[in-house]
Image (tube, rainbow, N blue to C red):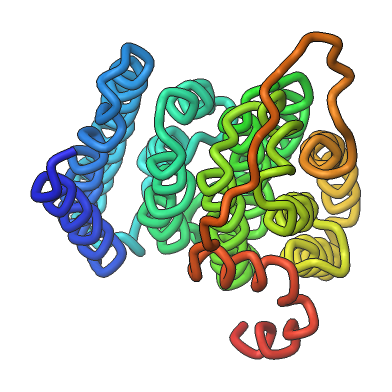
Length: 346
């Protein structure tokens, strides 16, 4: 891709995100989301492959529909209440439309169908943007409007997302699709707590972004796209394969790794809110995700494939590991002891 075009796309992404997260008026928030959508399309379609073009088309159609619903929600609220402020969303129809629009943008169940397909058609770095940076503006809008939203509907969608994200990831062999269903499952955890403790949702989102970035950057360094290549990639950079296993287990939420912290805090908060059955259900559903993360970790480091046919051995490379990858992976593994400091930010 032309460096100037890439610079314009990245700058537009930053601009759109900044406009959305700093706005109080619905029209400005909508403008920022539109800038974001248009800026990411050239990055998705960049490989000039039919899968990439298909992914870009699906992404555009879905995001355009979600933006239309969001605009319709805000204008309906303005018509009935005279308010364009994001925090003053009070009309019931507008609240329902907004929940639908944000759910489509984030990929929450039952509006999740586009997300795995778009991620599968994108490169690893574009997948990194789609799973982290592109989720930030919609999460911010959901956070600002959360006091007005229907908590029963949000809780139902959150549990469905956690269930389906874990269930659909079990039978996948493509790493990007597995990470897409992982993202849907994590979004369920974020959504279930957003009404009761919005700051906890943000901390969960930040930690999820860090863990996903570490995983995807490691996969990019070792050029892994599916399980069969993951099985033979351990000879390239053995130390990085070992830390990849720990990063995947951190995403699964196993103690004493960083990913255990948000799950622990969310279950604790749900119990405080006298929602023990909900906390029990979502904790049990996380076992589905744990299964496919363990399978990935097993393929990454513990086993060689039972393979009778000849295949090329991967030569070790002397390529140094990126400093950013090393830093993110270290934080993904070791942040749990710093939980009192993180909790002090709540």
